[in-house]
Length: 332
Image (cartoon, rainbow, N blue to C red; front, side, top):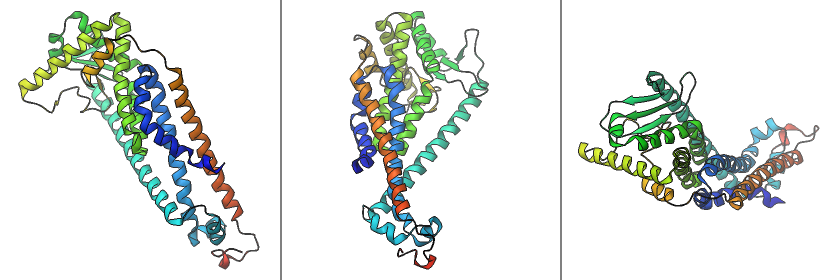
């Protein structure tokens, strides 16, 4: 069953190649709930496999073998792969771990900044913060420690939309808050930091988050056509304001490019989202969901097999109590 050790790496390749298609095929809500969690598990499983491979070469360093009370020579005879390949795997694992830690620190920093900004926002009677701004924009800030959730809308957007379209925007942003969509996006970001193969899937998750909020808004207002109309009008108003200001970079108050924590209705491939809303609501795809669960299971089994194999080899290479320490590098 040695092939199981490689199954997490295969699962990463499969999810990297098919993940965007799976995210598009599933209903948006299912994508948001399932795919980021699977990404984290699969990235973690690949990291475990790379770490165990890297430890093979590290464990053969004489000083490390002495500390671990195993024979470096005997362990070298047991190793299944060239020591250079194992060392490369270890370096890769360390690099990916550093990237994941850096991403985690950045996410925590963004959350603290968002919490401070949220505490400064004073909502109106309906809980919506109206900000004077010439850029049509609406976005949500999630509930954070000592900072309640906020839905922020600019005066320019309120002027650009009628009452029904405003209800759509508010429902969209409320769906981001109630669904805690920022958590799913951050999980996907963390997974693709730990494994760059998953970056296309992370982008698909970001799109699915916006689609899930669109579908929630459509259910609340009772019209998919109205949601598509509101999104299109808001996006056109924002584009016109950016052209008028000569700001092609789109530096708006609520731009998702400015704040990784906030989520905006007017960003995120509006044309594709509007087109999806003009077609029937997506149906459940059980086969795709089962495929994601299968990838998760295979990854977990493979990671456990890799750790078990390493533990068995270290036990076999353990030095007898009577073995002189001076001979540990060559075995007893």
